[in-house]
Image 1 (spheres, rainbow, N blue to C red):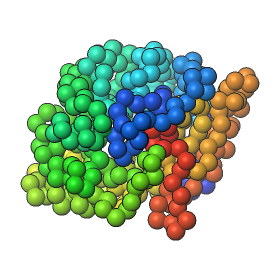
Image 2 (cartoon, protein in one colour):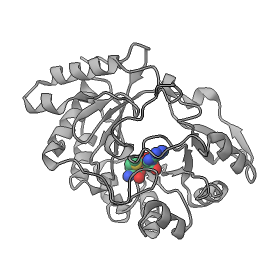
Image 3 (cartoon, helix red, strand yellow):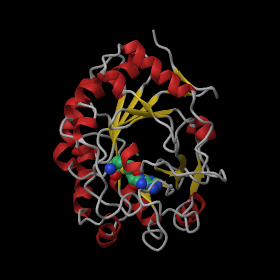
Image 4 (cartoon, rainbow, N blue to C red):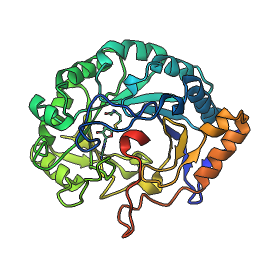
Length: 332
Ligand SMILES: C[S@@+](CC[C@H](N)C(=O)[O-])C[C@H]1O[C@@H](n2cnc3c(N)ncnc32)[C@H](O)[C@@H]1O
């Protein structure tokens, strides 16, 4: 019998984010230092079978309906296609998506779609190759663009493009990115930069906020807010561009957090449950898996962890502390 992932505030988690690896082939300045990080050791990572088992439990015992694979860079996980295939065969079938930097999608998009992937979010912060190189410390702009195109052609739609804007680097690009996305059939989403970088270099001063982004977009486009009810638990506030049908999303995780409607639960690549990106506590599932716990026990541990989910991320609290794990190790 399904027993939902409910918390004390009455929220129900139905959207599972699964990190498949903490490794990445880019070094975005707002995420990781140039030299990378101390990666998780292979024996600590969940195996493909363990991941599929946990996703099955989440779907059949806990009411999860959406599964998003992320990382690190999920396309670096050798078993990705097989994992997707097995998750797509589960009953009831979850909606399956991927958050990726797009490098490698040119090669894998068709196989991913064939395995049962429904859609992708691709991260791209700039249309300028030299800015991309500065921002990611890698010269791969072209690979991302061709990966995006391959995703669209493979039917992994709607293809959403996520961009983080930073002062003095790419904060003048919002209207160009939106125009480009519309022209190419992608849905553009801008995300406020969050204090989740490994270097702990985030400062609220100088943050490019949702208001800044909207002001910049309105210099070129006429934006109308979609009905509030349509937003539901979706983190993005969506706006119709020039009366529609195209839309743009703005994710104001810092200035207008959406914690009250949060429907997410997270599984790290080493098998820890996190109820929030900013949680300072984790609950271990890997240990239970490896000592042979039955499905019902694992489901119970997950429910207990969810019950204790905090009201909000607490970014505005005077005692806010950035979590020890950076975004790349939690799964963004
Ligand atoms: C951590 S990445 C993981 C998945 C994949 N490698 C990718 O690039 O999409 C997921 C998303 O988090 C975003 N991200 C990383 N650090 C961030 C931060 N400090 N604030 C806001 N977004 C961040 C990235 O831009 C990306 O869109």
